[in-house]
Amino acid sequence: MKTARPLPDDFRGRPFTVVEAAAAGVSPKRLRHRSLAALGRGIRVQSPAPGLPLCVRVRVRPFIEVNERCAASHLTAAELGALPVRQPKEAPPMYHVIRPEGAAHLNRPRVIVHRMKLYDDEITLLDGIPITTPERTWLDLAEMLTVEQLVVAGDSCVRMPRPELEGRDVPLCSLDDLQRMIDRHKGKRGIRKAREAIALIRVGSDSPQESLLRLAIVRAGLPEPELNVPIIDDAGTRHHEPDLSYRKYRIGVEYEGELHGDEGQIVRDIARSENYTALGWTEVRISKRHMHDDAKAAVAKVRAALLQAGWRPGRERTIAPQLPF
Image (cartoon, rainbow, N blue to C red; front, side):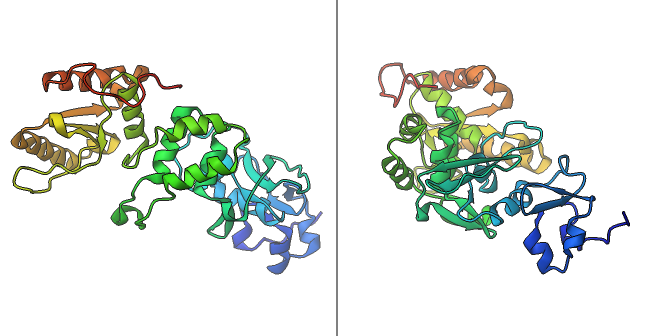
């Protein structure tokens, strides 16, 4: 067989549909060449395919385009929508798509097809790709996540974004949107976990680590902290926002991720600590090493600060002394 003509640059190293290739002038003969591998009917990729380090958006698009009434869903929709869900390590990776009840069955390599009740307003477009809405994605994730993981994902859905960092000023969805999904899909698999999780979702967590720290604190029977509420001094001056805080006890809890090792951030953290002292507040600094073993070290630091400030067990009601994780 003769050497094949080069593909258009846009098709090299990624899956593409036969339809878009034909529109770009690729001949049927070229599409039959052995240098191309078929990823199911109507989809081709230049060999070798399985090990290509492509983002999920590039890989999933052709599977959606060649099948009507399909949308990215579950873990795939979570990754496309930047929800903080840890993806399982699969080789080769699997992609999730959803179809309405009654739609024809699909059998595609490396694609998990979910056929279930699906409403038109539960699908949106992301860069031209049909994808389940954040609230529907969250509900679908209840099929495969723990309650704790579902709370983390829910916190991310309802948090208020920072426009200067994210380019948007509205949440992905609201708590009411999540509740609407639960009410609409009463018999859905995972619905019990979704009901448990929504009672623990809070607006205000800026990261999965903050969500996990809050859950560990409450699970240990400590008072539930407020999230990213600014410190306002006696003169009414607004200061910075602790990640978690107890205004009654003048305690701020700061989770310090990997970026806090940056030289500029270290300077800012020192200034923040000095401000805590000047305001008469106690700063509790938590890092990744405190989060091991169910965050016992982090909880111990927060408990010690609360006791020092006058809190005593049993005096305040917590939202859930024992969480179903």
